[in-house]
Image (tube, rainbow, N blue to C red; front, side, top):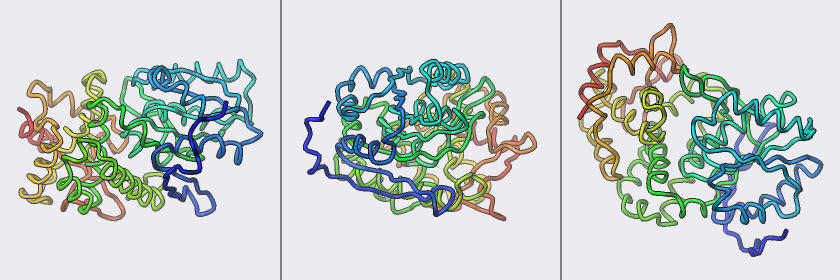
Length: 377
């Protein structure tokens, strides 16, 4: 089926990311109607491939005709999946693999992931192991996935022991960040994505932090120019970091700022708390740790709190949180070493502490507990 859009006039930017080596690159397309370029890209790069589309059921129900139009006359197996954390499991991965095998998919498979971070992580992990590795394309449909989860090649599933503990690094063949998806996002989903953009600004770019502070009203009203700027800049930052450290052996650890606590909070809540809101709580806790360890000034800590306030994030963590239980859950975090949780520590807004190529640090349990208590309601 041919799309009714005028593709020649599509306003779109293209970034190219170096993945693993300078010989292996993939494009990131950013802009309104970016999805209209999907079919041409697939035909140009994967004309002889069999295509399987793993898509969020909710996105399909709202955007099915648009997704079908974007694939034009490409014959694809459509695999709907509920886009919740419960789907990001070894059991769901096995179901998808069996479905592909039942339909005689082989080494010529191309997987296209359409949805938020759950769908991207799950689809990428399937692609990383199916027939010992097949290519996949990311089509993130949430701000959170566009700014963070779809970039950098991390793929994974969850277990009862924690988030993202089983997975692989498997870079996508391309990413299509279509801004049209953002306009229809519920406010809670939109804010969840903004938390990741705030995170990377706090950890890596003071100028982006200042832009967020000065343009909070425009961003909350989904002003196209302001949104395009913060999305592009956050992708550029992640691109630069991933190129320098594709497998998280050093610098890339700073992207986990707010996540040691955030992932534990998600797990403790049974994933009732959305990822971005858990990360915003993690930003509070880990800024407090940075301050208590004498690395971050109180004034800059308060600047971070004020920015979270501008966007309507909670300025405290739930007073009912069991500090000992959440610290125990932090021990399962993938940064932990020798059963001790590690944290990204800020020296300034936009600058994380480092030592001997490490960007995460062991923090004593009593100091973690004090930080959590200080941030309770």
